[in-house]
Image 1: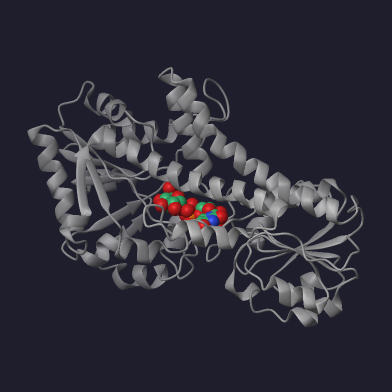
Image 2: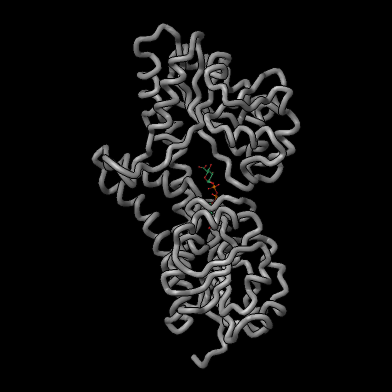
Length: 440
Ligand code: UGA
């Protein structure tokens, strides 16, 4: 919304939310999310044509176009628990829009939703109501950490509508907004169901690439191949492409797992069990990769972590964000605590969130932003997030301060492994054999 406000000064953008603290934060200098470039963007138009408030009724009444951006987490109980999207917030919002609307509106689905949700939305909005509504689907493809540049230069903008006269006219209103800064050929339109499905499929394909390269990383570790070299060779085929082929200890984030489970559930509901299990295997491979990483740490350290200090470098699910949702570091930390390890968790942006994620876990955990402190007297270092600053640490100094033998497990393959080995570390890269100082 901030990007639309910045690029379309003739539009007034009202962002409304029931969460007072969050709206207060959006109106302050400390935004509720860390995202490079976002504060500057918000400051460039806040108070001019971008406003944040908790006045939901007023916001709905004044709007001609409403973007529904409520969360759709995975259901935790009832039918479809653990797989299907929980649409309760979305439905409440649809009912509120209906309750307060007295003029025709275009409703834009921004949340990621199962296919055919627009139909349910229409049924709720139109039941027993004279006000006219046109529902569009306009999924968001930005990634965290690069949100502002992704919005500024999107690969594409997708707008789905009903293929009726009213649907097509509503769709062109939205096309006109994006056309303020996105080249026309990148604004694609489709029927509403294709648009809803494309969002799930895009995330499923991205996650599938990650599970594919992570599966290959396991083979590399057994065969003296190096996953980065394999990824380079494979990715140079222009049909495959070189992006999204970085092997890791597993992918995280609030979207991939949820969206694939949702896609897989959808396939089950349409009685397509083979399709459902094909997509579910992407998640299973991700679990395997996280589990494999933990097991590697345990077995390398003689199957006992009790009382050992382990420094975790990075807790966010990826670099340049403070977000830890579904971060592989959560999985790793919990498993290490069960083994009796003492953890020193460090991250430039996510230690507060890490504390929250691990509340209630039993064990010895300290948090801080200084990686040198975290590594002091540690037996092992685990790189869980690919923050640039971890590439540039003084590893000689770190090695000196650690207990020996010192281990380093690079869950993101961002370090110079042979240099670390020369310093004295026992190095466990991802997707290539270990470099140790042990006899075999
Ligand atoms: C993802 C998609 O990339 C966006 O296009 C989509 O709009 C978004 O979900 C969404 O549905 O909201 P995001 O979860 O923010 O974006 O982050 P990604 O960059 O996709 O990273 C996801 C995970 O994959 C991270 O844990 C990251 O470290 C990992 N990853 C990514 C790898 O392990 N290797 C790679 O090569 C790339």
